[in-house]
Amino acid sequence: MVLAGGEGKRLMPLTADRAKPAVPFGGSYRLVDFVLSNLINAGLRRVCVLTQYKSHSLDRHITQTWRMSTLVGDYVTPVPAQQRLGPRWYTGSADAIFQSLNLVYDEGPDYVVVFGADHVYRMDPMQMVQSHIASGAGVTVAGIRMPKAMSGDFGVIETAPDGRKISRFLEKPADPPTIPGHDDQCYVSMGNYVFSTDVLLEALRADAVDPASIHDMGTNIIPMLTAQGEAQVYDFAENIVPGAEDRALDSYHDAHMDLVSVHPIFNLYNRRWPILSNLPSLPPAKFVEGGNAHESMVGAGTIISGAHVRTSVIATSVAVDAGAYVEGSVLMPGVRIGRNAVVRRAILDKNVIVPDGAQIGVDLERDRSLYTVSDAGVVCLGKGITALL
Image (cartoon, rainbow, N blue to C red; front, side, top):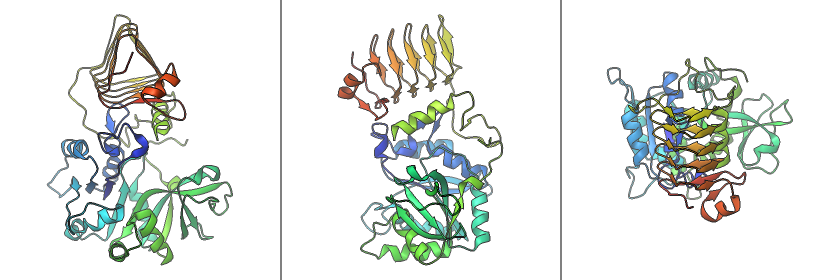
């Protein structure tokens, strides 16, 4: 099960008109493509994506892109809130699964994998499943190592001295507990879980009748199973993906800038663990009248005409006209950059128009009065906006 029902408020205005997992990334993908690629590459091919918030574009993308062979019963299917237990929507991630337990009953699995839908990463989930089965735990929680100084803003996992059994699960602790033997590192929950089915069902039923619960996986279900001695951590650092090297808006922007670096931490060109999606039928990108792009990714159907692009990710069907300059930016499909316009350190959502001579990211004080500007000075224009001169 993939949890894809959240609003994604921290990525506003990119999520003003779509669910967070449907936000475009890397010019050719949606955020949900990363978790689905991980599951499919690992051989986990019976996948339900639980959706709720502004889910039309997400549902359409999943339906059109993720078509599996039905011959052996494989599927990736969006599952909207169905109000099976009464006239109410999902009240939390645990409630989303509880209201969708018919999907579990239909398949009758021994184990259920529950992953979030809106992170950019590579992982082989089958290695985590095998670790879970070998441990005999009721639930296994994926933990990513993070410096202690940065861990207080997340759900932190405290383990027993063996480094595996979870002793406490803390939400945004002031003094995060560290990993045994590593006083400067903490385990932060990735929001990815593997459950033994009977343990999951019992926990969800108990949570559903608890009036004090907010019915959230990280806040309620995992602490409940931790108290019962049923939870263990899976160290994400132990996950080995074939072809991998050892090595809020600002994070979204930084991740794109990594893509166009010489040696990206997250390499989209790893053919042994591909990120899958549905690419539109478009002609190749075209550079005319001296237009050029340096240290950038440029999508199909884009025309750069007498303009200069540097360290940017340009999606499909973008037009950058003569004399324009784009630097350190993320341009989503259908963006239009007018003649002599300047765009610096910006995220432009689908179909944004920057008129001739307009400037984005040059005068941040002006931009703050008109658009969304992050703490690090990244300017973001929402879907379909025409920038002001």
